[in-house]
Length: 322
Picture 1 (tube, rainbow, N blue to C red):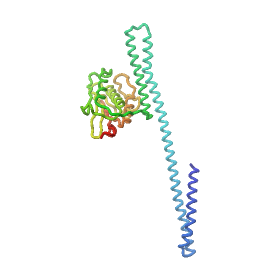
Picture 2 (cartoon, rainbow, N blue to C red):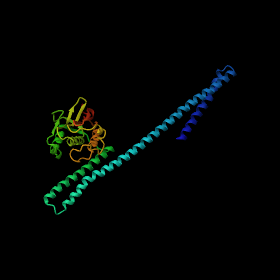
Picture 3 (cartoon, rainbow, N blue to C red):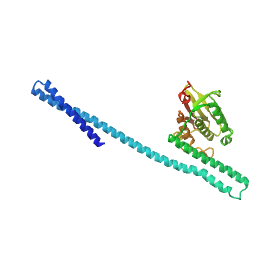
Picture 4 (cartoon, rainbow, N blue to C red):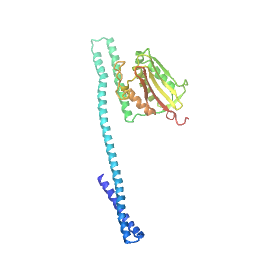
């Protein structure tokens, strides 16, 4: 860096001085009427040369200093990013260690109980159900961790195609109507709100990823809603389509609004035991971004929450459609 600056300054100074000496004397001799006038011109010429070269040197040095400061700022930013990445990795591994132990301890514990002959077959059937549940929880955690890792590394594959939105949302609704979480929340008014009754209404997006987002958001809505309603669906807008999931649950405190999209953040209110891993919203936010939207929410504590995201027409329709 220093050698390069020195070479630049030397070359500029040399070229400017050479050209000035070469042409200025001839010019001044041709316009000076006497030796005395020429002498005055030479003095002014010297001051002019010093002024111009000083200005050029100032600009050059300032430019090099700005470049150096910019490089230092980028290096500092990269260092801070690396340190933050290390902190996030440490926190991630710490959370992973805790979250894996919970279902794994359940699996090991119920395996020991099943192998114990003092328990009846009926008891072992109950143990087997718990064993199956903990196994599914562990598998779900691993899947979620892989998903969030792919999203963060920009390796998540999106496969867009034309599909019918109403049948897709109906299948999601039916799946939740038969879920264990729905059985716990039997009194909740659960509805699908369609932007159109036309079952042939088509979108151009990734139905698997869109379904994944809806399932995560609906699951959270049931999780934090003890009474009232959970509704999901879409609205047709002139500029695109607005998807939403709303509930009348506990809402999100102002202190938590900047944290809910962070991996492993579960919130302060654990409504249905200690279930879930705090990855659903982080995954949903990443998937919505990959699909061409931005996941947002409005929430009032003890009143309810609405998550929503909009896909513009140019992102949801294939090029051949208007």
